[in-house]
Length: 407
Ligand code: F0G
Image (cartoon, rainbow, N blue to C red; front, side, top):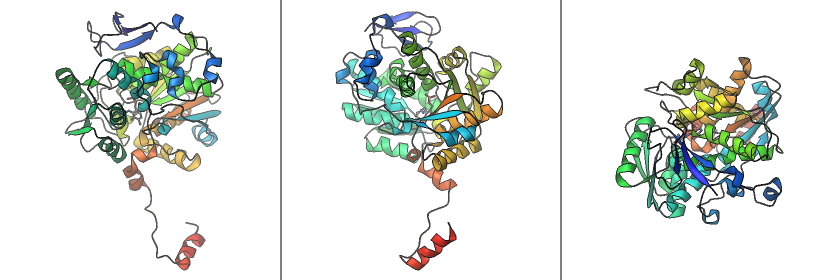
């Protein structure tokens, strides 16, 4: 496979052995470029393979896919969701449920490739700053690879399930008395100083794994591309990765069309939405981001330029939603479709509903909403919002009262 790194700002290209995470010349974001003329991947070849991320190994830039650090990530379900279609007011909605990945979020797609690259580069330790899911995923993949893992988290702002995972998998977990953006600057400095391999989404190799979500959506819809894909945005790597996936599939002639990429942020953390509305290519960072969707509580997303490019190139849009809208969508997904997601994930559905109401999205569209993380990631938000379970003596009389009350 012929692979290079290219800066999305100054377009300078670098060899794939370059260890820098950003452009050595201008500090712009780097993107992995695969020479697609050399790739042979057909629908027939895919039919023979099991439904995991590594079925797309021809498009995964690692030296030896058979030695990848893998927990069988990818291959997540795509549900047809008629109740959500009615809720949002569009013809057809599908839920791409990324919570079904091994550690319960889409991050596993990135980490299987990212940790495999870390080993290729000879790293003995990996690190990240995280709002929770990245750390949960990285600690599991580092454990599988047998290397050290350092995670920095904004203290007191991590959902309990995610924190439990990082601790369980044996990472060195450090709470920072600051927000995610500050934690990310600190881990970048620490990685450079102590030779730790950084696996935040600024790492272009990690995003290569995440592009497989786009591949899967195309395949699961029988090689028909939806009109729109709606993605919650935090640090903004995922939306750009999914877009890259669709573009590569089109270049290979596997699909004919491209979807409109639509990014949703929480109102209290929406610098990319502001930049999109204003027609700017630079964001103005939000100093003190705040939202119930702690996964996307990010004020200065590092991948904002990639996300804005994906949204604009694809003819998509960006919108923000309130915490109340997020929590309502979480409830509808859980109660009407049986899909339990964490708040950040529900932002995609809440955003779609809002965009339809605003007239930005046509009611005739066929839309895929990506739900990024599992409900169990954040049990505290559930117990703070819903009634506690009933408790009774083991008596049929008492139980009968409850049954007859219709509770
Ligand atoms: N949804 C969930 C559940 C997330 O955990 C994240 C990001 C996103 C959406 C946004 O994805 O950053 O690619 O735009 N979580 C990161 C973390 C930041 O540290 O776990 P993005």
